[in-house]
Length: 223
Length: 219
Image (cartoon, rainbow over all chains, first blue to last red; front, side):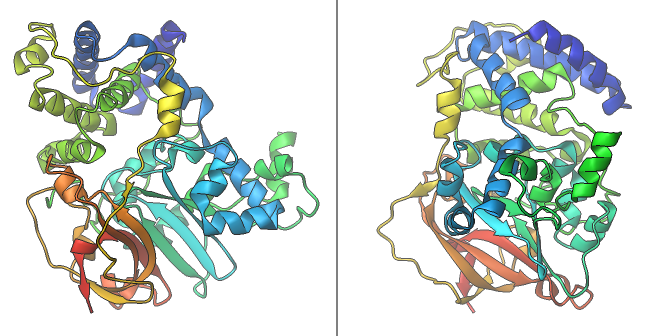
């Protein structure tokens, strides 16, 4: 892995993001680097493994995996049923397994039901299908509010859910990880799985968003 | 422990701030803190429950003032010292001062994808029969343990319904403290939003939590 590239790349992000904590973050960065050296020197970790871990979650595992799962469920009724019956097995059949996805449950949105996922106690998230969680998912505002004010959080994400629709929040308190299957947008009859997958956003699989409408893709392409 | 990690239902944290095109990591030290945490996890020196317990042990003011990977890193430093793998003097000086002691496994380059794909399932065989079944009404216990637990404050002493039985899973309340896996039946419990939050909540809405049998009594 090109760790030099990462270093440069990281440096450009290090400031803008967590401004106001400059010296504390510099201190953290020094401590992390020192501990990395100690752990390598003691032989508890190997540099090559560290690089592979980062590369895996930076480049290989992300929400495109989950989008393929959802697109398959939309286009293959047998797979949809298998996914709802035993998500761990169904998702494994597409090659997505392992850490933070050992016990998967898929929850399906319908015209009467909107599902959304949180981990109020830490940051539990289905890594094999969504990759690592975004900062907002791990943040106090999201973790604190989703359970008490889900509709308020959804409104902030620009998602309006009708009063007549049930909002169902899944707080991941154990090792069970949840994947939301969003509703298939209209105007997609006959679409290939590959095309459908492009409509499935990360947020739609957390439940803080909806799948994209075909018009949104067209606008994106024309931009 | 009623620590700062137990955030469900707290108010006044402000809006959920999102970042367009967010990268997986925001700084190189975050990459390293993440990778060190996972790689050290593979040594078998501690469990995921112990990692959570170590992060939650931060005093609430420190927890809330720290970024996510700062919390991870503080937990890692604490566990390394607890297990005698790195001394406090080494962490303070940033230099290796004492020899390593043997660990069960070291994650090698080339083993990463297989290790990640295997994961660490939490389900276990148990001889104990499940006390509850789908459709049973239950009530969560009133409890305020000083040890690690996965029953959030907002869901204590509330009535709900069992909607799914997951089998017996490693029990965090013991496992987080090195007291054994003590597998217990795990259930998804459905609570109405009104039961949890009162009359202002939408009458249609529900919150589901995965809860171990010792957290529950018959209602």
